[in-house]
Amino acid sequence: MLPPTAPATPPESRRPLLAVLLATFFVRFGFGLTLAVFASYIIGRSSGLAGSDVGVAGLISAMAPVGEFSTVLISGAIADRYGRWPVLFAGMATAAVLFSIAATTRDRYALGAINLAFGVASGAILAASLAVVGDRADESHRGYEMGRFDAVNLFGWVGGFAVGFGLLGVLPNGRLDLVFAGGAVALAAGLGGAAWLRRGAATYHGTQAYDFGNVLRNVFRRSVLLVTLPWLVIYMLIGTALVFLATAAEGIGISTTYLALAIGGGGAILVVTQPYYGGLADRFGRNRFLTIGAGGFVGAMVFASLLLAYGVTDPLLAGLGVSVVLALAYGPAALAALTDLTLEMSRATTMAIYSLTISLGMLVGLIASTSLYSRYGNPGIYVFFGLVSAGLIGLTVARLRENVAVGSVSPTTPAR
Image 1 (cartoon, rainbow, N blue to C red):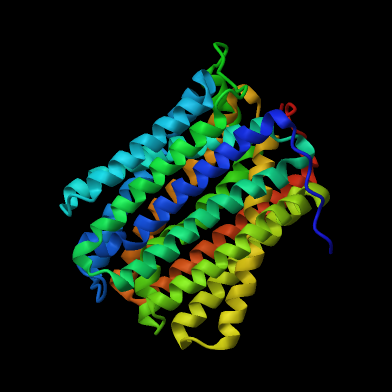
Image 2 (spheres, rainbow, N blue to C red; image 1 turned 60 degrees about the vertical axis):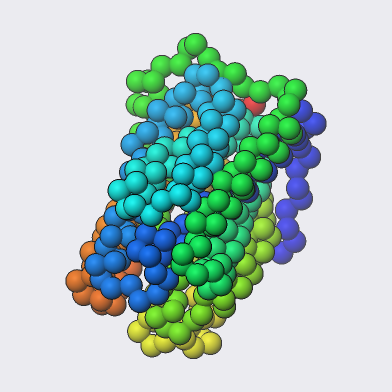
């Protein structure tokens, strides 16, 4: 199947979209870079985590999702009321400062507080960024534009993880503070580049007609929830993997260097697949690719469980790889479907639901997975994967039944 033709972006939208993509890459690169080493940084060693260490690292790591989900709706409302860019730039500047502070301390209470504030900044950045893309994407091309955003977003994550895991195998634990300093530099670079690209461009500056109560009633309606709740379940899985992937890989005989190379290669696949999947979702329907993506996530959990149980084999790695490629179809289709349901004056608040659900999913996932693993070991992880899979399957069935009952949901307003 040939890839869909890339839509022509209007000249007035090109620089702001490039600014968001540039900012997104550097933000996610900095986040991934530091998160890859965070557990080791907290406990003061890079291998041999005991159950109590896992619990402490999981608790401190969970502070960022707490900060994000408890404030992101407010960040979205501010972006709708006063404009996207002030919220985006303020979040990036705050995150850069927090990284700089984290590089100076290993006090667990201080790192917990820093991570909490970091979550607030992260939610603001994501809600504002998605709103900018939604503002400038035509209805027929939303999947493609959201795919481009998701490609850069995820490529930044995996690029940061790849470099972070690589540094974890090279730097002594006592010099991991340099990783946080590098994260601050990445945020500053993204902020400067985005501000330069955005200069002089016409942008959305907010509205005095914003009604937070009315917006909340709309963003929590059933059609929106059936698109966003699967993210909560998915990020229960992803949040756990992000924090403990390095130690889990070492436990089944995969070195951090090999893991870094594998993740870096996965980032290249993301750049290709996300706009491609988004364009296909524009052409053939969001719902179809939401279902394909959900199936891919379930398959990935099945093969990950088998790898934990039986060790590394080529067939299991191949099955995991195919499942992950299929899972990548979910993001662009879901972001486009969510944008279809938004009004411009409340878009950032609605897109904040995405941030809220993924941060809440990371929090719940970290608590559940670390508790199960600390008590039961690998069987606890199998139970965790099973519960996540059941939740994702149940929500997918509910969304399919909803679509059969009411038909496709039309956008409430054009994107521009």
